[in-house]
Image 1 (tube, rainbow, N blue to C red):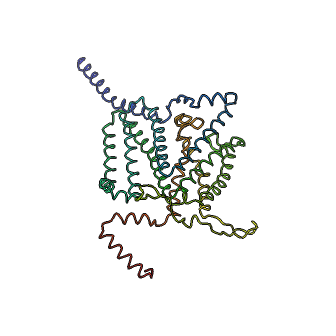
Image 2 (spheres, rainbow, N blue to C red):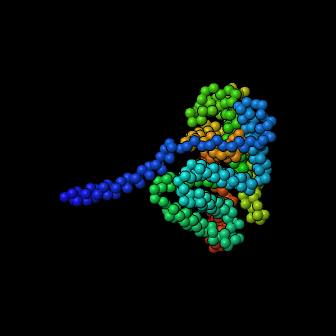
Image 3 (spheres, helix red, strand yellow):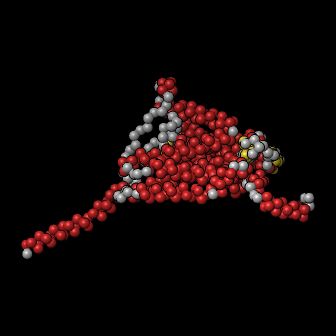
Length: 433
C-alpha cells in the first residue's frame, strides 16, 4: 500500500508539472506583450548634434533663447536648400521626397528595434527593409506606367516589367510574407506579429504618402510647393506666436503647444497661402503639369495655363468700397488648403507627440539640431499630402489629353485605327470636321 501511495504521489506530481508547462508559456507571451503596455524603459537622452562653433557662439544665452536661435538658423538653412532644389527641377524634388521617405522609415523602424532588441527577433530589420523595397517597387512602377508610357514603348524589357508589374509586385510581397512566417519563434509569436504590424503601419505612413506627394507634383509644381510651404509657414508662425505670446495650453499630448500659437498660426497661414499662390500662379514653371518629353528624354514644363491660373473678376461686398477684384481661382483654393494645413495638419504633429510619449523619447532622432529627426519635421506634411491628393481628384482634375495620348500610343496599330475612325465620325457629327 505504501508503495502504491508513493507511485500515486509521483504520478500526481508529474501530472501537475505537465499541466504547468503551457501556463509558463502563456506567461512568457504575456511578458512579451507587457513591453507594449507600459514596461518601456526611459530612452537615453539623444546626443547634442549642434555644431561646436554654434554652441560656443550661443553659450552665454539661456537654454530657451539658445534653442530659439538654433532652431531659427537651421530652419532658414533648410528653407534655402529646399528652394535651391526647386530651382534644379522636378527630378531633384522627386529624389528629395524619396530620400525623406527612406529616412523617416528608418527613424520609426529604429525605435522599434532599439526598444525590443533584447528579444532578438530574427530577421526583423532585414524584413522591414525588404518590405520597403517591395512597396516602393510597386508605387514607382505605377508612376512609370502612368507618366512614362512613350519611353517604356521603346524598351522591350520595360514593356515586360510594366505589363506584369502588379503580378511581380505581388510575388515579391508574398516572398517577404513567407519569410516572416518561417521566422516565427516559439514564445515570441505575439511580439513578432506586433512588429509585423509596426512595419506595415510605418509603410502606410511613409511610402504611401510619399507616393501621393509625387503624384501631386506631376499635377504641377504649385500643387507640391504651396501645400508644403503652408505647413512650414504654419509651423513657424505657431512657434513664434506661442514663444512670445503663448499662455494657454492647447493639448496635453504636446504641452508646449498653446492656443495663442494655434490661432495666430491659422490667420498668418491663410494670408501667406493667399499671397504666395498669387505669386506662383503667374509663372508657367509652377502651374504647368510635369510631363515627360520622349524627344528630349527630359521633363517638360510648358503649357497654356488652365482657367485655374488665369485672372478672373470677382464681385465683392459693397462695404469693401470696390465692385470687383481680380484674382486667380487657385487663390480661392489656397484658402481651403491653408485652412486644412493650419487646423487639421497640426493633428499629425499631435499624433507624433503621442507616439513619442508612448516610448518616452523626445524626438524621433537627432538629425537636425534644434528640430530632432526628419520625421519630427514632416509629421504634418504626410497628412497634408493626402488631403491635397484627394482635393485635386475631387474638385480639380479633369480629363488629361496628354495622358490619353500616351495610352493611345501604347495600343496596336489596328486598335489605333479603329479609335481614329470612331473619333472622326464623332467629330463629323458634331460639325468640328
